[in-house]
Length: 279
Image (cartoon, rainbow, N blue to C red; front, side, top):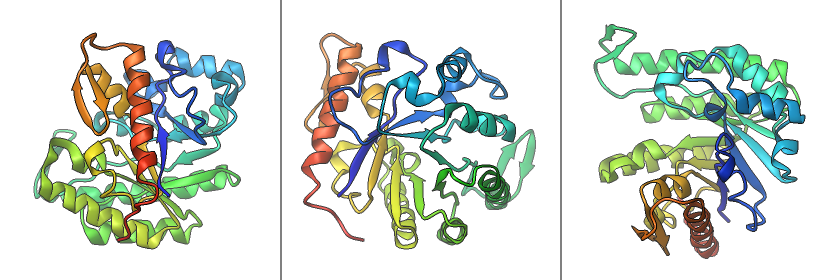
């Protein structure tokens, strides 16, 4: 049965309680929301949480809280390893994603003003980097429940990284399907589905991140968890969900609209729990 774990925007006080009333087993907090624009230090919200004694006390939430490391590409390269260590130590989440990485399928790619002739080589280098970081985090936090964020730009890379994570005892795996759903290009969506199905066959549990497309919820329901931010993104564009469709909201953006969208997404996911796909 697929579950919904929404991302809660902790750095915007008006949105801190949008999950109230849904009896959710887990919520997700983005590390990105706790960083300064430089990515190498923390903002005031982080210190508010730290001073409160951790994310549970700050949110007054007794369920599972997941620290989400997926972030914008321009931030990934700027966040030092020590920031992840300090974040886990201070926030005290129940679960934490392994590190994000920049992976590309292009034959040429600019990075740090250098032209790489093989974007896939950049991907391999990035996967090596986060694999070493994963080993270091596991040594530092032996009791932390890590969720392995699987990265790669080919089926083979995806398979090998997933297998590495499982070999290290990390059998709950995650995949950022949102990158493939963007713009609604069917070829990209099908490639994302292929990668997700490979990961599902290797791990014990599959988390699909960025799974906000309501019309495809059943199609991807071979996953165990949907992590979404779409209740906020859709509201920010002045749209509301009516069943699986988004329509203009007369009042435009509001906190109530974010809450209503989250409740509608929750209902949509709940409806498919007896229609799970198997791939």
